[in-house]
Each structure stands twice: as C-alpha cells, then as structure tokens.
Image 1 (cartoon, rainbow, N blue to C red):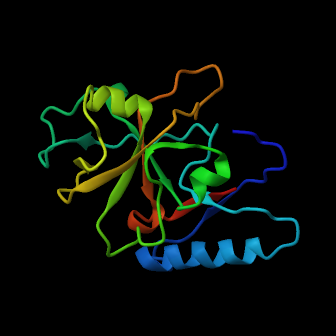
Image 2: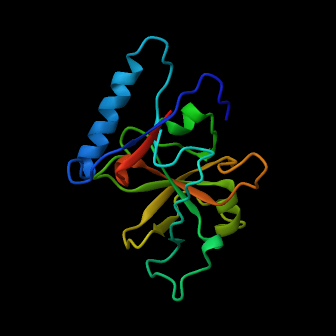
Length: 179
C-alpha cells in the first residue's frame, strides 16, 4: 500500500465498557467523525495494521472439528479483522467475488475474504467463493465471499502469508487501529 498522507493510530478500549456491539458502534461513530474532518478522504479500521508485528494466528478449516493435535503454528493463517472500507482505503484489490458490504454485520450470515496465498493452499483447483469454512474455535460456519490480492503485511522483503479477513462488525475485538 502507499503510505503517503496516511495517518494511523491505535485505540484500546476496556472490554467491560465496550462489549461486542458497543465496540462496533464506537468504531463506526469515530469513523463518521473522522470523515467530517476537512482534508480527510477516507477512514477505516482494523485489529492489526500493516507492518505492525502483530499476528492473529487463527484456526481455519473446512470441517467444524478442531484438528488434534493442532497444526504447526506456521501453517495457521493470519486473521485480519477489518472494517468494510479497510481494503479500499489500503488499496487492496478484491480479485474474485466481492468485498464486504453494508449488510455484512453482526446478526447476518458470517462472511470471510481470503487472500490468494490461502486460496491456493486450501482450495487448489477449486473455486473458493461460496465455500463454508470454520475459523477459531467456533463451530458456526463462515462463507467465503471473495479473494483479495496478497499483501506484504509484515515487511516488504517478506513473502505474503496465508490470511483471511473478517468484517470487524461480525468479529469485534477491544483494540483497533485506524487509518
């Protein structure tokens, strides 16, 4: 991504004051306020911003059962929890399927985007769009709605890793970075 004229900052909120939906409401309210600032062209947020050494290694599988024993950590994809505008703001292209939309929020069917590296690894010779997968320790499925281009999240000299993206509104956390 092009960092020219990009401002980023991190916000940590106490989970007892901002559980689940309240966290998403806080984030969306802050986005609206930041968009109203003169000169601001776009605003988005994510659990982890690029080039920050935070990885969210999260189980990703095609069946609801957790593997026993767990797979080696280096084979577990990095989960990116992002706002629906994040990929556009960061210039990350959806190359197949679609990106997140207004209706991809809490209470709606859960959806994911995967990057090319994860698509090639988990779905060789298959179309991943429409596939149901399981993430984390959850037994509720997610539907893959899009494939995004690979991004060098952890350094420009590093090979892109397998990643999936969830809409923050469907997987809220208590910490987020804004860009």
